[in-house]
Each structure stands twice: as C-alpha cells, then as structure tokens.
Amino acid sequence: MALTLYRDKTYKQKAQPGDVVTLVDELLTKAVDVGASDIHFEPTSAELVVKFRLDGLLNVVESLPKTISDNVIARLKVLGGLLTYRNDLPQEGRMEINNGCENVVDRRLSVFPTIYGQRAVVRIFYKNAQLTDLEQVGFSPAIYAALKQTTCANQGVLLVTGPAGSGKSTTLAAVLRHIQKQFPGKSIVTLEDPVEIRLDGVTQVQITPFGPMTFPTALRSLLRQDPQVLMIGEIRDAETAKIVIEAGLTGHLLMSTMHSGSAAAAILRLLEMSIEPYQVTSSISAVLNQRLVRRLCGKCKKQTAAGDCEPVGCDECFGTGFKGRMLIAELVRLDSPLRKAILARTDADEIEKILSNRGHAGMLEDGKRLVADGLTTRDELDKVCGSAGDI
Image (cartoon, rainbow, N blue to C red; front, side, top):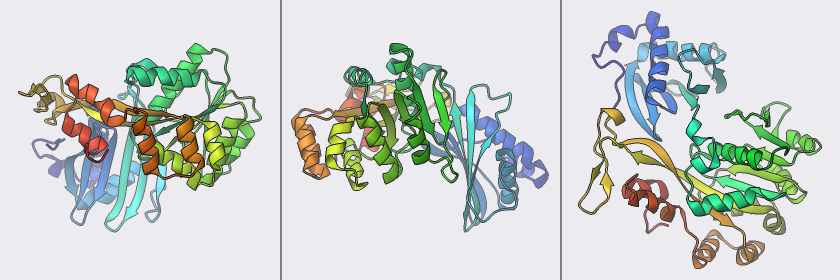
C-alpha cells in the first residue's frame, strides 16, 4: 500500500520550480512523522519517484514531474552542503536538523549520477531511548548472557555481522554502554565513519576514508593512547582487519562490524583477507550475526486458527500490518572443534555442520520465539532468514 503525501493530488499543482523548497521540506517532515529510516529520490525516464523505507521495506510516496527533478536534487544538495554544479560524480553530505525534528539526531545525504539524472538518498537517524541499554535491545536470554560474559574479558575481538540496516551500530552502542556501567573508569575509544550514535564518556573519532585520517592510520596511533576498549565502525579491508586482529591479541578488548551473511562466512572472510588461521582462533572471542524482522501491528493483527498471528492493515500501520522491527540473532563462540576447523581452513559448510552438531541455535530458531509470542509471522521470518530448507 503506497503512502500518499498529497492525497488530493494537489502535488501536480504544487510541484512547480518555485515551490520545490516547500515540497522538499514537506517530504522530509513527512518522513520523520511516519518514522521512515530512508528517503529515496529515484529518477526514471518519465518522473522522479519518491520512496520511504518503513520497517525495512520501501514504499512509494509520490511520483513527481520530470521537469522538477533537477530542482529537487539541487535543493537537497543545498541542504546537505554539496556542490550543486557538479552532477557527474557521487557526493555525500550531512543535513542540519531543524527545530521540528527533536527526535532526529542526524540526516545523511548521498547523491549518485544515473542515466536518467541524479539519484539521492537521505538516511535519518533517530533517538531511541528504548534501545540504550543492552538488556533492552531484544536479545534472547542465552545470547544476552553470553554477550555480558564476552564484555568481561580484557582482550579479544567481538565481531557483529549482518547486512546494512540490521542494527549493528545500535548493538555496539548498547554493548559500550554496558561496559561503561559495569566497569567505570575503563578507557573506551571508537573509530567510526560516520559517528552515528553519540556516547557520553566515550572518545569518538570521525574517520575520513578519502582523507589522511583513515581507519588503519587512526588505529595505529590510538594503540599508543592507552585504550582498553576499542570499537572500529567496520572492517572494510585487509589492512584494517590485520590491525584489529593484532590489537585483540595484545591486551585490548576490541569490537567491530562486518558485512556478512553468517557467522561462518565472517570467519572465512578474515582468512580471505590474509589473516593467518592461528591469529583468528587466538583473537576472535565471539561472532554475533543479527537481522531485524518486522513487528506485527498491535492494533490490527489477527490470530489464525492455527494459533499464529497474521497482518491485517490499518491506518496506524499505513496498511502494511506491521509497525516497528525486532532483533533476531545468533552468537558463535569459538570452542576446540571450531578452532581446529579454522586452522584446517575448512569451508563454510563444514563449519555450519560443526555448529549444528553442538546444538547451535541459529537465527531461524531464535526468531521462532517471536512467532510463538505473536509478535511476527513465519513468512516474515522466512523472508529475513531464508526458508527452513535453506537454513
């Protein structure tokens, strides 16, 4: 079901070059009102399609006339502090937060040239007081207990994996807050690109990937700053991976993220980055793999004859049947059989087999508790994790 900004279709009259400022402001405001995480401005051969990402899924908001496409993108560039006269290269910027967006902490703009014109995406970061503490994030009791145990260590590496938009930054921020509470006085430093969540009492460093302050450069210097806990926003290359692993071996508790489909794939990716197997087995404490699933709308969900709940759709959830998202995860801690497999450079299938033999609960199993509680559906779980036959 598409959302509609101008339900009376007056956008055709309002969408004139002179009204672009008002139009863009209304779109940005509407996105915050409905809780969209991203706004897409996608040019086609005939129009400019505007979409909001709600609970992880894109919904078409409006189709604007092609005649104002360049004006809309130019207005976004002005708000993001980008070069309006350069239309042939990608640009990234940050939009200032206005007074009407008290629950927004940041807005990031990315512009990219396509064959039909420039494509723009605005990512919106919100304050969320409900996700500040580790116990509030939504982990199962077993994973929560294992994470707390991991944070008690004085050295080692915690890897958080998953696709973009799976809540990795939120999880790491909650872990750092937990360490602050449990071990006051510890020196905590983060390297991020960009700094998404501000943490009081934590030294946070903004990285410029195309400038002199890169992840490897900053990390080498930071190791001389007497840190006890380090958080690296993302392991993107072999050089960063090597420094992270070495730091985990030399008396630092280090955590970072990596784009990976599974915990096993994350471990193998480190090996592909020329990290020696013995370094992986000696430094990695745990790998946390996570996803977000949509939460059924509490106002309109309906119970089926089988006892499950299914989406219906109402004004509260904009007809989608879902409102909000929840976390599902799996945590892999390295034991003796797993270390032997890594040292032997075995493949992902063999690692998954070892995990299965020891009774490891994957994300699909973790998500079943949410289905049983009527918080999401099996179809939604299968979309996020893959079907039961694929797991």
